[in-house]
Image 1 (tube, rainbow, N blue to C red):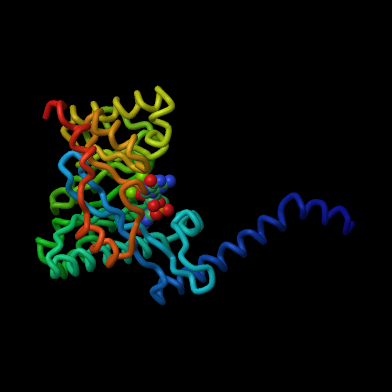
Image 2 (cartoon, protein in one colour):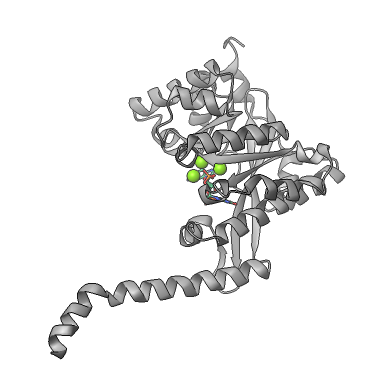
Amino acid sequence: KAKQSGKNCYALFDPSADQRRKANSTAIRKMASAIESGQFLLHYQPLVDCRRGRVRAAEALVRWNHPLMGLLAPGEFLPLIEHDDLIVQLGERTIADALAQIEAWRVTGLEMDVAVNISARQLHQRDFLDHLDRLLAPYPPETVRHLKLEIVETAALDDINAVADIVTACQRLGIRFSLDDFGTGYSSLIHLKRLAPAALKIDQTFIADMLDDSMDLAIVEGVVGMAQAFRCDIVAEGVESIDQILMLLELGCDNMQGFGLSRPLPPDSFQDWVRQFTPDPRWKLASTGRPN
Ligand code: C2E
Ligand code: MG
Ligand code: MG
Ligand code: MG
């Protein structure tokens, strides 16, 4: 009998799945208290207009300064909480931190747009806009207008009508938003028309192989053309080499982000980086001869 029920039990109740669930909920609880105690912080990666030789914005990227494991990247902890309300809580914290940073930089004379990544779950919260309003309330319009939001293309397509409403409301508040990891989802032109994003960020996988793979190059060219037709900005992500920069300039993609320009930096280092930034003379050569 024992043997039989044991067998049934096994079918209904996978002990390894249960262990995994327990381990997950323990990890989530630990993360919740880590958020409480301020172990999460933002690094900032410059977004550069290489054609004009100007730093255009910073993207805020969350890090977990773990007391034992050191600095952890989002890939190591976000997947754990992406289906939990904790990601909403962390997301609000991130917007609050980014606003405080915009304000702090402004006080020292650095006017800098800051883009914050919004998770799908956060975006689909029924009261997302109320929360956003509450976070913006303490700040003057000169600070608020520097905030930008990034939504990954796949999340934006989840529920296009709901997302379009939120995006429209954000735009009314003067907040621009970009479609992130563009090319990994299935946006049709009608979606783009509805969302009217301020920018498309071409996913870094296309940039990585652009110089060796003619299909990837064609995709980059296509997205650049589409962005031009929609009069929205285009940003290349994950730009690592000078050859990629020069090719992108030739294709008409001026705005870039990547280790080839700078890694994401702590706020003070970011400010120093902007202060000492000088455009590479080769950029200018690659962009001349291109119609404006
Ligand atoms: P993302 O928004 O597409 O951000 C770009 C990622 O590419 C960042 O990784 C950045 O460090 C990395 N990257 C930048 N330049 C290069 C390069 O030249 N080469 C390579 N190989 N990588 C480069 P990170 O910081 O690990 O973030 C990963 C993802 O996590 C982000 O992708 C974003 O989707 C998400 N994320 C980051 N911060 C937040 C946040 O505060 N909230 C939410 N919801 N998601 C976030
Ligand atoms: Mg992003
Ligand atoms: Mg991206
Ligand atoms: Mg990404």
